[in-house]
Length: 137
Ligand code: SME
Image (tube, rainbow, N blue to C red; front, side, top):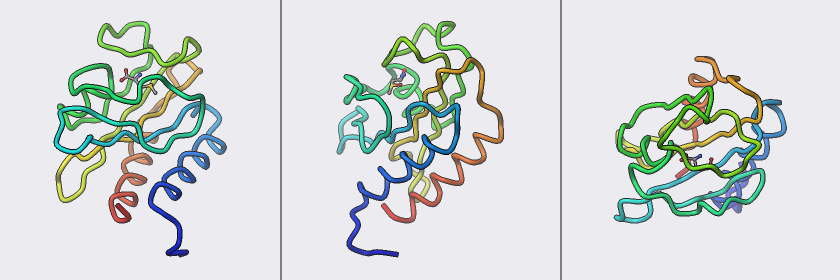
């Protein structure tokens, strides 16, 4: 490994890789708890820029995962009432929390323009990615 790479560079590369290799991953990003505030802050991502760089705990799919500590798979974003739209092209979303020493410190968030694309395989895969990410934070 190249120690000169920063954590954000590595996370950005992971986002780009996932987005380019998985056809139905259209936006891939990490959100992290913002210091000791009850909010998430956008970290490295790949895909279209989003206005939602700060998300309060409890708000949207991301904010709900910050408090539930559970994966959230959304097959159809139009059916969710607590949802923050980043792009009108998005049809589905998956958010998987990222734990460091058992503490929920953030999450990986993936948007898809394909309806209902996510399976348990995505959940297991993204849990694996997050375990690896936890080791470099
Ligand atoms: N849709 C998310 C907001 C983040 S964007 O998808 C990048 C939500 O409802 O929390």
